[in-house]
Length: 223
Image 1 (tube, one colour):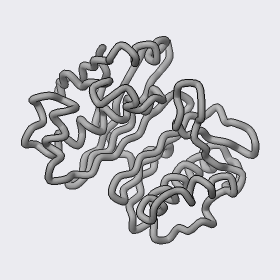
Image 2 (cartoon, rainbow, N blue to C red):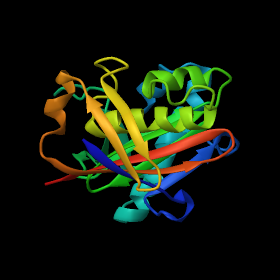
Image 3 (cartoon, rainbow, N blue to C red):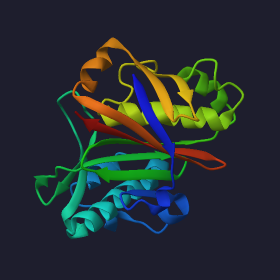
Image 4 (cartoon, helix red, strand yellow):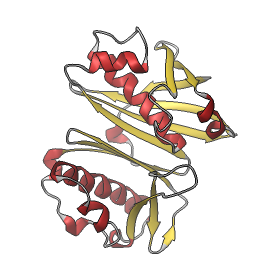
């Protein structure tokens, strides 16, 4: 299965928002809807800040795109249907037809909204990330932490776009090859994952890389 990839600038995309922890210090629980508070209270101290940032980012994007009041917007996680944990956007008491995705890692947040399935992932560089990268792209990312971050984020973003994450194991989605010049990546999926891709014709990744992190947004378009 082939997927298209392209380097882009998220800062110019009105449906994608990138935040870091410096912005998170400005937020408190007043940015949450009452239905989001129970989720917030279950987070540990470090995760609480990232939770606030992720919820704020999605609601900011939704309010701007859909022209609805910020206070009417909230995000809950899906609880059934094989996509448990997938964030869903609500306007008032109604489930929106927009797809959203949120990712956070080490104080950095990537969020997006779209009319089609999307998956967001941010991976922050760590000393041992090159080793982790071999799990996502065996034998290709060892020793290169930037490549490892990017490939890991592609893997996670695709699984999140499907709405299942890596629940079937770390090798349920494999980035098996990348041609950077042609902008094409090869994907391999484990058998349990295959039913979730049915009905999609185009897969493409947008990505942005900085010194300490890689950001990826995966888009799935229906036939």
